[in-house]
Length: 122
Image (tube, rainbow, N blue to C red; front, top):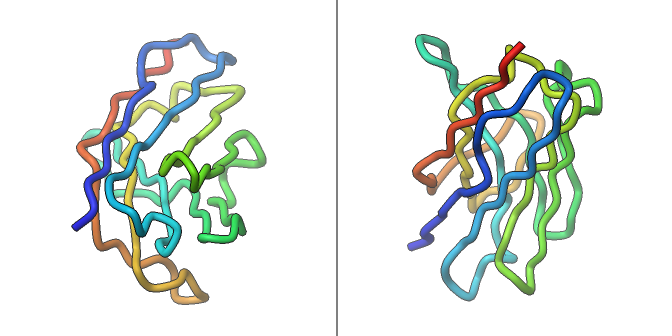
């Protein structure tokens, strides 16, 4: 079992930046693909970004380079750097882990964190 705990959410103004962290338990963290997924009220979950055990990354096309996902396997931690935030970025951001590699079919999620709220005001 893998436990994921997100932190770093909060209230920011449009154009501001925020850095989210996801701390993972266990000693096999490096074996997993890690993801950030967000969900706004009344809307479907949306994949924000994913990173492989080796550091290869994938991003949602709509982000236009504003977000950066990274991982530190020595610290069992995944990060999401969010820049130039917009009100439409407001959502609960979840950290997720997948055993299977991400491919052309998309990600597979096996574990979820509790989520952290990000609110962007105009």
